[in-house]
Structure formats: structure tokens, C-alpha cells
Image 1 (cartoon, rainbow, N blue to C red):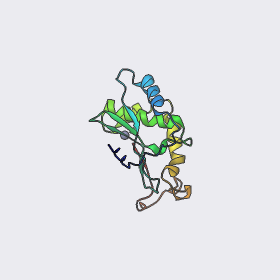
Image 2 (cartoon, protein in one colour; image 1 turned 90 degrees about the vertical axis):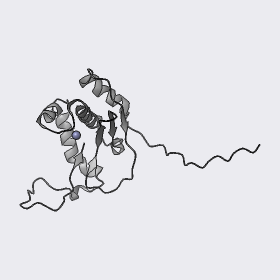
Image 3 (tube, rainbow, N blue to C red; image 1 turned 90 degrees about the horizontal axis):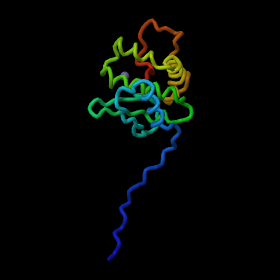
Image 4 (cartoon, rainbow, N blue to C red; image 1 turned 60 degrees about the vertical axis):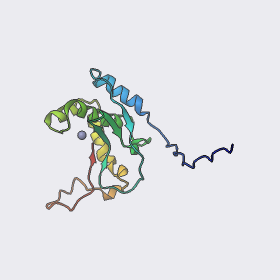
Length: 156
Ligand SMILES: [Zn+2]
């Protein structure tokens, strides 16, 4: 009986992993959301690194109650507290709903490293967008007229 030729399925390339997402998520859950069952938190699908205008760093699927974190964050350049701030944000969507309203922002500030996280993304967003620092709009140059679609933002 001839052995069936093994189908040639390309093996997934092992992604270099740096942050242990499960531990980071468990910590956020234990600290802030222990009254709720823990949510599954996983890296999203790796897609090519390219120049972007914006990047969605995290998402919460309210149908499946799952959190996805952008795999671009899985590198030593990104501090653990920043990834946790994204996890925290997505948990808030689970608890408070989809809107970024005042209540949502109030709760956001309860994350221990909220300010550090905001500061970090302000300084490092260009890296995640695959840009040079010089391509990023400067805050000091307040444009009189709106600039056509500036490189902007991290969404989550
Ligand atoms: Zn959000």
C-alpha cells in the first residue's frame, strides 16, 4: 500500500515571540476585572509590515467576547505596560460597551500606567506605522487649515 504523499502544506513560520500575552492579560484581569470571567486575549494575525496611515492595535469582538492584540506589538521595543493598556482598553469595551464616551475615558484613566501609555504611543507611533519620526505631524505646528489626511492614529 503506497503511502499517501504528504500534502505540501507550508508550515507556519514560527513568529519570534517576545511578550507573553497570556500573563499580561491575566495580570490585567486579576487587577482590574476580577469580578468578570477572564476574556480570551490573543495576538491577531501577522500581516506584513508596511507603511500605514493608522493601525488598529487592539479589538474587542462583542459577539465572541474575544480580544485581539496586533502582533506588531510583540517586540522588545514595546513595553509590557503599553500592551496591558490595550488589553485594559478592550476589557473596558466588554464592560462598558462600544462607545468611547466620557464614562469610558474616565475608566481608562484608572489604569495604573495610563499616562505612561499615552506618552509612549505619542513618541513611538511612527515606529508602529513603519514611518520615520520626521513624517509624523508635529504638535507644535498647529495647522491653520486642516492638512490633507495626515499620518495619524492608533485605533483601539
Ligand atoms: Zn476602543
